[in-house]
Image (tube, rainbow, N blue to C red; front, side, top):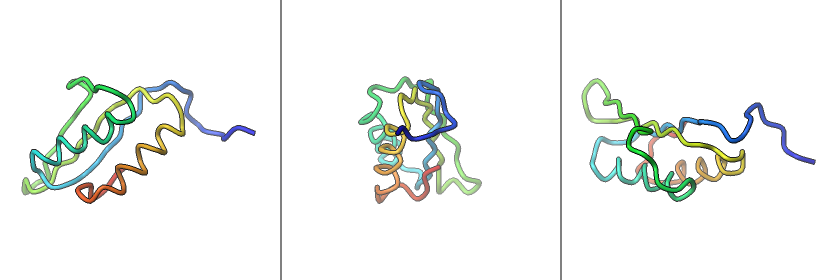
Length: 87
């Protein structure tokens, strides 16, 4: 039996992470996702600073191939100490 999902794969899917605004966090966010999807084009990455500039949200839109792939990305991203929130 296959797992039901509302998504049809492959599809464009945004992975959003929040953390402290440091160069290390931006690089870490990218590397965590690239590990599962391969090289990411700069155009697929959006950054938004918090009002006070201490935090940043990074949204990386990937071409998701399966629910399993997305689950693996979220497990790894959520477990990383620099990622405060993953959506």
